[in-house]
Length: 457
Image (cartoon, rainbow, N blue to C red; front, top):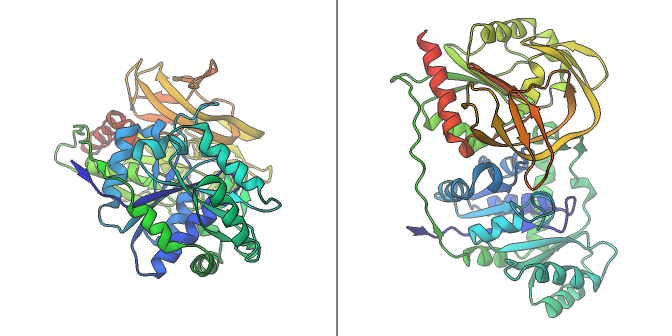
């Protein structure tokens, strides 16, 4: 069965070209018009969706072809757009940048597989007719390029009409407006990308200014007409995966505060659909786990920036260590994995005691380690899968561990590079790799089932 979903995708030649700024400007402007947009981010990025969510007040979702697979991506796009007016997708990196030097799982790949019209956001500073050459290059690389428009960034109101006329004459694409240089609306960065939305006290003011500028210099009505021109999407049935909860909903404690904030909204919802009740808590501030807690999900984030606060919460560190020792099912990804270490050297170079469930120490390696997508093959049976089974995953971290684990073999796609990683026992997964539960439904069901069984012990 097919269903109409008005949608468009903002993409760019490279990271840092202004995609997130344009996406947030449009989203906030549509909200101010009284519309109900929904936002999506291609790829594994956790941070940009936080800005989308801040702009519209509705959780932004990730559409990751590698981590989730095409069927799950289509379901997410359809399900999360069902009650909204328009879907705004934001690409990752450059339009054609995917796995290794291919375009597999790129923003272009997403546009093609979901039949979504794409608008190229181009930084126009310091260029004129050359902008048309750049756009024509993106049109020429693939016969089915899906590009339907252009937005210019960092150009002046005076120059824009001539740039628009030139690009439209040379490429045949519609130029849907521009955003001038707006340094007061810039978004700060750190080692894993932008700072999180909650860390910017003036974010509402920045979003408001962007929306006002979008109304002045972007053709919002034209962009909406483009979104409404998208062809219908075909719905695909979800896989029949179920957890054995023995008619009791297990409570999974999900760590969420400034130190632990990297979660996929669809993945959390999927755990609930499998029968879990999610209870959020703060390892920085709470003294105890949520009531009747029978499982733990410790996501990624920035524990290295909050080492002292985590250390000072002695009660929580002891509680979590005791919970793991008692066999409470636990999934700990990247930052959550670091929190389980005995010692974490924080961002100021201070050694901070952590939960102590992993006999190891972690420190700043000074460089991005093992970045990108991978396929994990279990070398040991455990909480999430049996020996030989696989999970799609990704890594993105600067901190390193003296004991990263050896329970899985990680293989980079389209590459000969691989390594062993992660801890995997009958009650715990802990390691640097992140995964998306919607892309590994059997592993998610096993986790929820284990939590339900722990509750009955």
